[in-house]
Image (cartoon, rainbow, N blue to C red):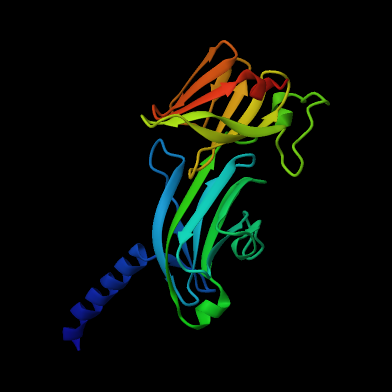
Length: 252
């Protein structure tokens, strides 16, 4: 009987190794995988596969007032994602099968958010397989909203159905590419104070915060901002280039 002891020890070691390297699986069968951003980056891209009733929660921590962007690229028509706020196991703030496979929103509270990737029930019952690419980003400094910048003038009405005081295109350029137009939305406070949300074509949202003569973005990212005449010239990470008219920031 003592001859079996080395084999039991080996199997115990292998079992411990599997526990360390496998994704965490909840009692309800949902796998949990933490999203990690590379240093100096505000987004991550993950390639994955799910089959049947398999469900994966991609988790990441964020602060109230920051902006989350999620995009799921998949060829399977029943492959979607939901976004769950901190403390929720089933109530979502975004439901993909109702609203599509791309979402951007300002986060309501601090804590751990879940991006839940799944197949709709009909496809899951057929044990179908979906390959996907998930891109998740967090931008903006925590807690920034109109109240942080001072109250916007009463005449500065918001664009209907949005949180923004103005929306539209502005000049931008990525790396050495040709200049293009990016879409923006701006939340204004008192003159000179604003948060500008910029979305390049096919890209995730960039948030620039204007506080008087200072411009900031996500902590840890490199930013240069110079005011030239009536325009701000902003460069992020030596790659993203934006021209922000002063009228976008202050109105008028």
